[in-house]
Length: 93
Figure 1: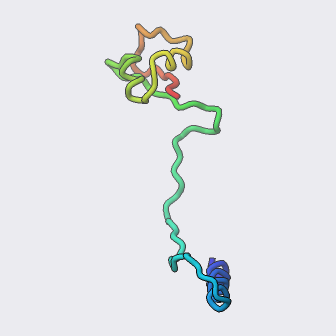
Figure 2 (figure 1 turned 180 degrees about the horizontal axis):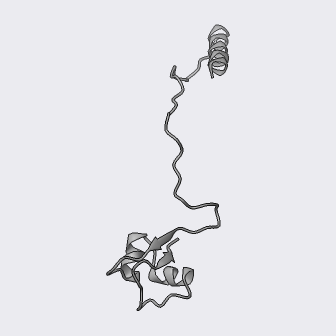
Figure 3 (figure 1 turned 135 degrees about the vertical axis):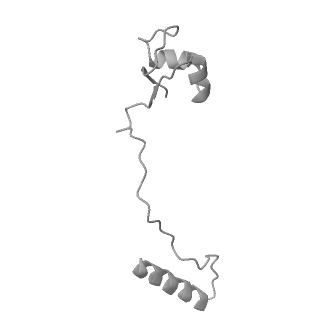
């Protein structure tokens, strides 16, 4: 990173000497010490799942995930929308 920063400073200095102006801010690159977060979903083809809770309906689940009941039924063609069971897992996206 230091080499890149020095090269940028060198380019900015040569631009100033040849009469051109730059609009770049003098800021240091930012880094984070945190590890990347994962959602527990492996790969792009796996869809997030939701574990049904007591009292849930497809309407309440759809509202929670900003989707429609029709979309949930399309993603989960084998579920009975009138007989959801707690701990049952359904696809939500």
